[in-house]
Length: 347
Image (cartoon, rainbow, N blue to C red; front, side, top):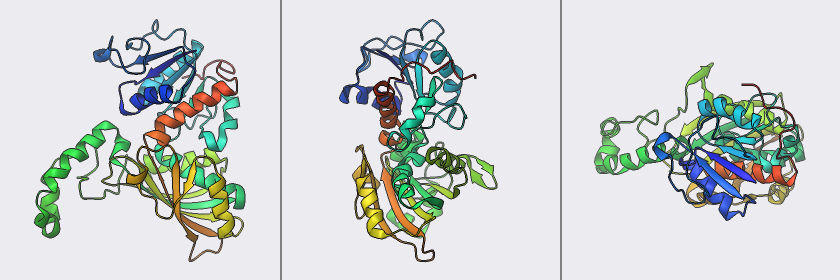
């Protein structure tokens, strides 16, 4: 079993390599791919030096785990698949392709059987919400939701974490300014990664506006939820917000069901769901670095008898990205689906 890790030096790729070792993945070789400046580097968890993507360097792999951005995935995932590997892609490039399963392992792993050489990993925000929503959908029939995300700086990768870390001491040095002249405090630093100064702030804009004032991040939350849960008509009202947290996304969800939910039955369904922990008040800080998703603040909706409100938290770099990618690889092996079902998806 030969496994390629594409984007191996990035924040998610580094965790992927670590998880393959920690979880005892049955790989005879783990081969990293990165940019030219990393060519030949020896990386922890890898069995061979770092390679650069080229037609003659991608041959002979059974699995290829991608976290290198959409453009790289579009160009190279089909080539890996054509060479005989199954690709698990962490970018947005293939998620809404009808021929590509979009998988959260605890939710819809059976979809893997229909793969044609490429499997997509969902957006990290969508991922966090899927576990509790699947548990409740099976119990009561999900029909609509209002989802407001509180997304960590790490959702923008290491550069997002670094920008927040650099801003915090500068903006926080003058508490009086934060209290009495927020605009002046905000202007003490520059922002390039996030849409505004993030330190001591909340920024209600992620991505670019693409549809009726909604950003691409918000549209992903709608479209990917429909595909993963197999509810094409699911009504979704999304708002995505960046918050000054290093790692760990949270989503406040108002879920509306076809059948009036019983609170005790809802809690039982959530507690029984794999890799989901029910906690009174889960927070991103507490759950950073943990594999499970946490859900809490579960309560009846005050306006709609068929509604529940809940708060979900998960590590966006682990379950939201690297961990689910490795879990998909594990499922592919366990289900004897490592070889493509047919030819690669056309680019």
